[in-house]
Amino acid sequence: MSTLKVSTISPLGTDATKTITLGESGGTLGIASGAKTSGFGKIGQVKSVMLSTQEFTNSTSLAETEATLSITPSSTSSKILIQWDTPFRRNNTNTNTYVNFSLYKNGSLLQPIEKGFSNTMSVKLWCRATYQLLDSPSTTSATTYAVYWARAGDSESGGFYLCDGGASNATGSFTLMEILD
Image 1 (tube, rainbow, N blue to C red):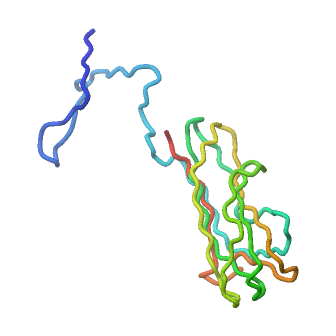
Image 2: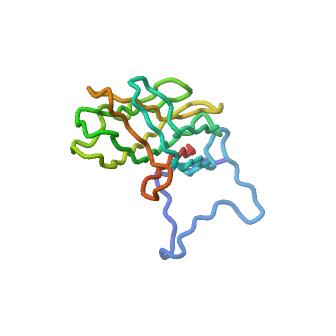
């Protein structure tokens, strides 16, 4: 058996016909044990939920939102791309009322998303919260991701709404994508 060592293999031909053929028709191509043969950043699976249920909080304790999904990675080397986008608004015009969002994994804090998130206008405007994170769960067990939220600031009477339960511009999404390694 011979060994060929090169740093780059470039095919011959024009851009339309650039093909590298390994082995002969009907032959067998041996791949070393442990060598990667697939994956390489492809999407393995996608889990997604449309967020349209109106939710309200005035609590200063973090609580789980509708943005909750489980995914079971197919490999311990897979990564999970988490994407969250949702509308929210203050229930009052107090600009000292804020909302905190955090991302949880299997019931434990993974990452604060935003602290003190609010519009600074003295009117009840809809805003959008958007967040992305690439996580490495290192497991092939079911993994649950969830967005939690709580009110912050100095207004006891104010609170926050997520979505509004019907308006087309007031829906959001929560998506988990397995990125194969």
